[in-house]
Image (cartoon, rainbow, N blue to C red):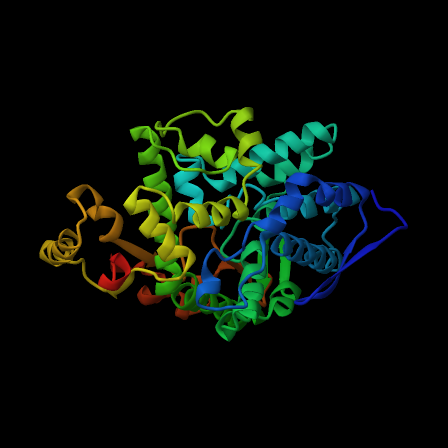
Length: 409
C-alpha cells in the first residue's frame, strides 16, 4: 500500500532513498531494525581502512533502494509486479541481514553456535510478521523461495543479487578501495525476466565480468585483508576464552545478553524465542565495553588478548599457499613458554587456519543471459571467459597467527 506521504533519506551512494509504504516505514522504525545502526557492516576493516565504519542499517536501506530500481526496470519491460509484490520484495531485501550479531560475521559462530545469521533473520521476520498481523507473509515466502515467482528470490540470493551489489559499492566507497566500485545502474538496466527466471541482456556481459572480478578483489584486498582478519580471529579467541572462564567458575564482567550466550557450554542448544529476544539485545557496544574491562581481568590470557584487540596491538599473521608445518608452530609455542604461558594457553596466541575465495560458481545459482535471438543461455555458453578453470577454481590460502614478543610482556 502506498501513501501520499514520502519519507526521503539521503544516502552518500545513491542520493535520496524514498520510503512510500507505511508498513516499510514502520518496520524500519522498529527497535529490532534500528539495532542495525549499532552493527558494523565490515567488522574490523576500519583497523585497515579508517573510513569503513558504516553499519548494516545503511546497507539494508541501500539494498532496498536497488530493489526499487529493479522493480522500475522490470515493470517498464513488461513484467507485471503488483503493489503487494513490490512492497514484499522491498521488505525481503530490507530484512535479509537483520539477524547479524555484533561486528557482523566476526561473532556469528561463537555466540549462536550452529545457527547462522540467515536463520536468525528468518526468525526475526516471522516475529515481526506476528507483530504486524501477517503483513510480512509474502515477504517471508519470497525469502524462503516458496513464492511461485522465483525471480524475486533470485534478486535476494544469487551470484548477482542486490545484497552483493550494494555491499560491493558501499564497502568500496567507505573503505576507499576502488576495485569494488561496480556499475550497479547498468547491471540493473540489463535485467529481464523470462519464464520466471531472472536473466541479463547479452550486452551486460562485461558489466557482469567486472562485478565478479570486483567481488574477488574486494575479498582478497579488503574482507580478507590480513589485519582485519587477525582482529576478527582475535575476537573469536577472546569469546572462546570467556566461555572457558565461565566453565572454570571465574566469569569476567560483561553485559547480560553477552553473558547469556557465552555461559552456555553446549553447542547444540535450540534457538528458542527467548534466545532470540536476548540475541536482539546484542550489538557492537557489548563487545567494545567488554574489551575495555577485560584488559584488567585476572585471567592473563583474556587480559592480554583484549588489550591487543582494543589497542590494535594485533597478532602477526603470515599467509601462504601451502599449509604450515607443525615444527613452525612448535617454535612459536617455545616463545610463549619462555614468557610464562602454560601449554593450555598456546592455542589462543598461536594458531593456523585457511581462507578461500571463489570468483564464479558455475553450478550454484546460475547466471542466465538472454541472447540476441531471444533465448536463455547459461553465461558459460555465451562467453568462453566464464568457462575458465581459474575463474571458477576455489582459491585457498593458509595463515599462521602468532604474537610479537613485546606484546606479551
